[in-house]
Length: 220
Image 1 (cartoon, rainbow, N blue to C red):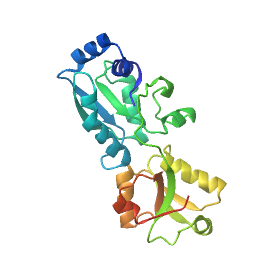
Image 2: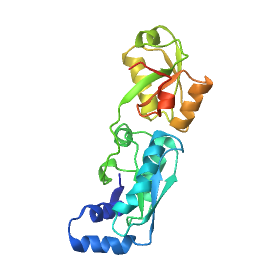
Image 3: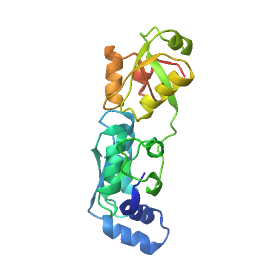
Image 4: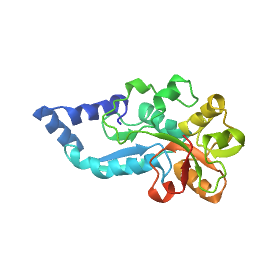
């Protein structure tokens, strides 16, 4: 995903079919370092996908620049999105991977939104997002009905992220009794909290490494 006016230039250069456009892009990118911003801490899903993109993207850009991943965690990815929109160079040398919830957070008026999601230029998607609420294998809460009958401590990142929003939605609409502990920096920290027993579960996209996924119980 590429951001706004400066990054619109990069998007156009990368997708333009004309030989002249590709030549101009090659001259611009040759020998250059492109910063690829990731709006989460190291070790989580966005970090994994962001680093995978950064590792391979350069060879598909005319001029083959060096693409370097840069973590910029904060506010569930809103800090990085705001940086791309308001501060980052507008010459195609700064790219980023946005949280899938960025447009929703803008629509809901979440604090910390400093961008217009409609004005980002999106040039790719890494993977479909399948949201799952789950508990750790040692938790007595193993079904949705269990979650309706007992309080279950669940973890999340920023209150404006899907890790918290979906738990609140389940409490309001499905009658679950989730006690939500928010404020974890990212999915890596949530996984550690699960293994330590600080929390019993969370809601995230179903893209955990097999080592972690084997010990999870899907509730929804």
